[in-house]
Length: 145
Image 1 (cartoon, one colour):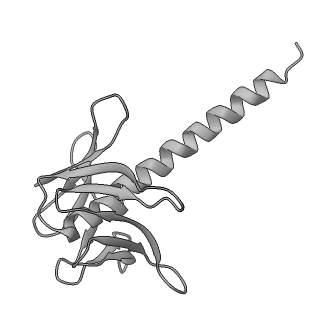
Image 2 (image 1 turned 90 degrees about the vertical axis):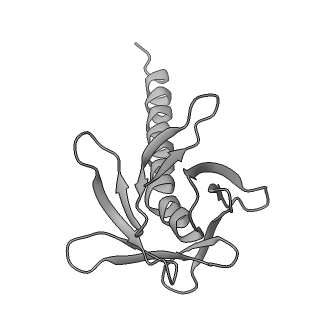
């Protein structure tokens, strides 16, 4: 079982879940972990678990570790995983940001599945929470009472 961590600046990394050797991805929670998707290890395709057929959400290039999300039209490049299990989110016109890791590293497929199913959604949730907090602070500052 490979543990997946979200990079937290100036603090210990936060464990989000794990990826089994067979490519199944689980989100950590109290009690039994929640299966949220899986990776086809031979092709690098990443699927989100849902009622009915699983949804393909992306894929990884098995030669260089580049990760793409599936969408209508050309797939979008979102980042890269390296041979040490480190995950980097693509930033246009800048160096890619280190966002997390999988420990121990097994393959690009395992790392990319963890990136798309656990780390990137956790980052989106964090940034949405921060945006709400900033909006609340700015609306409270406008109150003349």
